[in-house]
Length: 421
Image (cartoon, rainbow, N blue to C red; front, side):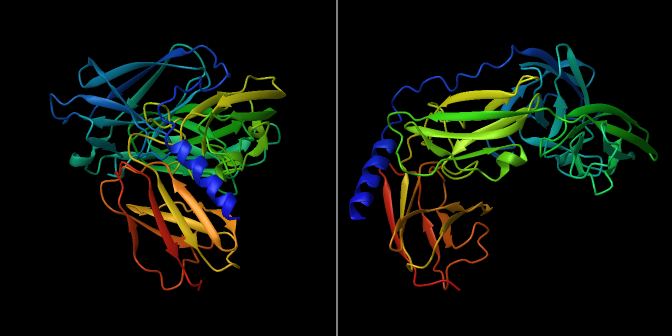
């Protein structure tokens, strides 16, 4: 066991030092040629002059507070702004607007907007958006409602669990397929319907809303065609072996981070996924933030796959990039726990307690985990150990634990715990 531990340490140290090597192409999957889509937005009439409007394309897999893509918009008329993006057809854009990159938009009732959605199905699409208010000028504005129901086109049965987005508001259909939006300003709003489980095709439709009135919406969704997709992850020379690699994405099939299996020196997994759907996914040793894959410039790697209609079998060969990000060194957590502990999880607190990540069980009550990224946090990072993924069973009589980041050499943190509650 000590030899296994030593080999693992050597492999991880090698991986930590491998950031200078050139990374291969991210994938052999060829996305369809991009089409142009114009996003046009009308700002509130009391917007401060001289403060430009930005488009923030968000990454819901990594977390909407991270991995933002900021795009400056250009004036397109009195109080309006526009920008043109090129994306593959079938892309589901997730975005929001900001003033001067610092003040975000809010709804007509002053609620924060997590993100808007727009489905790009072909060339020449134009999204006409309306910003109700800015966060620093929020006020109760006249608004109306949308009351609707979603059903299956093939059976007519109501569909539960369908996500509906409209101008930054989000609803989920109930057991009767019903949904309701309150707080939509007067005007035309784009509604996008997606099935998190991938059973039905995404769909979008406009809804004309008048202040103080209710707009009905009856929607039918077509069933999705499914394909068996095999993902093969090819490691780079610096990648450590023998540690679990997970996959995380925007569909229910990928939300629970399925574990990849060993495959010809690398990793693989086969999943049944819908064709024509905008699939976003990443590889990780933790979750969407902790120990996620990064490119050579330190950015998060978020992959996109749109399976062509009519496909029944597909193999996607991805090339692993880097687990590290930037010059800050990894942190090694070494834990001795009771031998009957079973699975042990490590949970970090960044603003709030984040998703717990499984530690690597080395046997005989010995656990390890290397945090490659992010390790450049400005303040000491709190952490704790748990027996379950939701940390409902944290360690008994836990001391206050924290670690300092932004170090030039790998730190090794040695902890022990005597028992569980």
